[in-house]
Image (cartoon, rainbow, N blue to C red; front, side, top):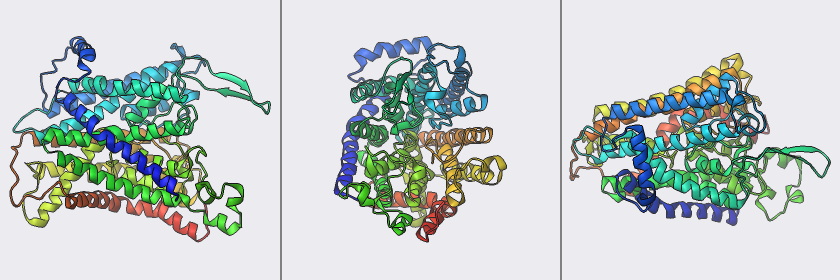
Length: 580
């Protein structure tokens, strides 16, 4: 590790910390229906949308109505995106004349972007037209992100409200999130990215002759507008196949920093929003503290792992310093699969951040990481991506872990568990266990087991041994966790993987959401009890430590056998001189 690398990590986290309060306070005002500085401009637009859609924003909904509205909206969006891909060949804004997307790939992609996963089993610049990129993929980047945020707000309202049957209005929440939060930030962010060199045009691809005389096609397109929402909305789907390692998506160190800060910005801000809405800001900071501890634990393993020279290279006697600047981090670390302009520190940081959140954008190839370095992104997703997490999904996932934490604390002291003044009883615990302990592991481990023995599944991994198993495991971890990143060593564009990963994405998104919303509805009906002498405190470092332990134990013990078969055994065999 280098001082410069550590300094860049601390700078990144410092910027995220500076954004937490202003973004969180602004979102609290938006979702409480309060007036903001944007209302004079966007207020008429909001009211127009309600009139056209026949929505009364003041009519609140029961949790079942709220959830059904979200599910129907998602189904319609999925079908429209599927249709756009299938009709791509006859639609406009297709300067390269790209044909219709294959049915199984179109289904996989439609599910992927609807669920905020953005898993891409295709090359963006060689498969999707400008129209599909904008009207289909970028549109879903906005609304799937907004859906995750408003579901988190609904669960927060469940804690904040007292003896109520409703948790808000899904349609009003969706419009306000998109209009007041995502759109303004993305307009500013896209302009900054254009300044940094990210294209934003409708030009045909450019054919050039290189210095060596070879012919090369340089892709163009409306990249900046999709790039910013891909990061801010923790979507991750790249305009180009190489994602954020492509110089058009991520041309400079500054654009790389902006991307990473955008990934954490809204997830971090929601912790402050939560504290503001429940009337106790220390509760929000406690959640932020637990997320931060988990983040630093991940980067503390990933960064050092990538700075070590592979034992096989050390034994070969190759002088790494002779082919690199001896003073640089590249001179003594694993630079395979990484961009020189970002280096090891920013590659490890990006990989950790993008899998802490359910983003899936990558600026390096995780398949080329060392076994332990590659285990960090894998484990981050297996923990439910609650470490800041996807916009909204990380927050409601972490709140479910908080419910599990106070239940364990209640067992220790022999009292009915309480959190934010609400008694946690059997209904809430059943729904929490269903989401955290049953649905996610069943999808991840079930599909991984199937792919590991099915002939079509075994055609996918490009490596043998434990690394090949990690490639399969990562695909279903990423799909179920709605992350979308890949080890980049799996041939996933096949009927088998397109269908199974699509099902994993649906299970991971919607089968998790329904019990979370049931918890929200149940909590909203409960009375708020003032804290007593026997109430377990949920604002101090003891609570933060308990939360961290619960997240690690539930996620770690559940998936430890799978990790032992993949990156852990690969690491041990690497030390013994065996490679795959």
